[in-house]
Length: 238
Image 1 (cartoon, rainbow, N blue to C red):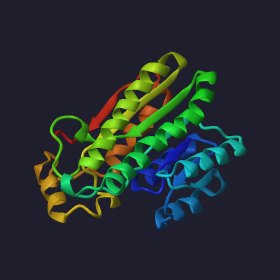
Image 2: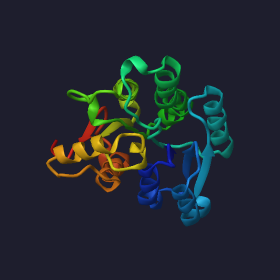
Image 3: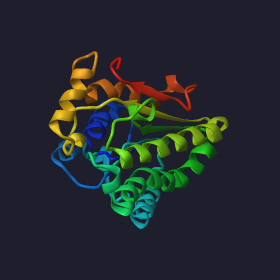
Image 4: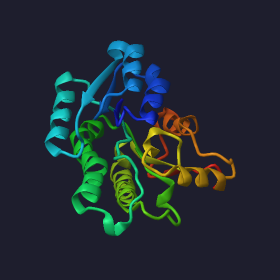
């Protein structure tokens, strides 16, 4: 399994929950943190760390070359990587810094990595690919998140296109779209916005990683072999 954005709260929890299914887990990260260090201590040699800035094509290509050199081409790929979410008015968003960086990190990296590994999956007629999307790709999104939402809509389109193209090859491509989760990803979102979102939920709280991980585990499993092109919404009834 290859997890892109493994240092995130979801990434670490997913790897911890799924590690028993795999002989090797390839874990991409941009910045090392305590959670990923702890996971490395737990899993030892099973966890192979891959550092790369996904916004830079050369770094992505170097990472895929490193995977090839190890001879452990992934059959399961989970794409979680995204820039930290922050509130900003559209007129103040920078074309390169906000939109360009977000699309490069989230979308173009996925294109490059999947072009590197999908041919081998297609040859084996087997593969599982899961994208982290967002509940905001359905219905009316919140204000002031245009770079983030634009990148997620692009990933949704990529997911559906790949699902249609590779269904005959035994490869499933799906998305998981959670509502707001209480993770470090929200550290630049105002506390008032986070609290208001929790109050508006039927659960009277925001989601946690524990609410979301089972969806990834299912879509990576053999039981989901006939599920492809689906965007699984996790909203707590909102």
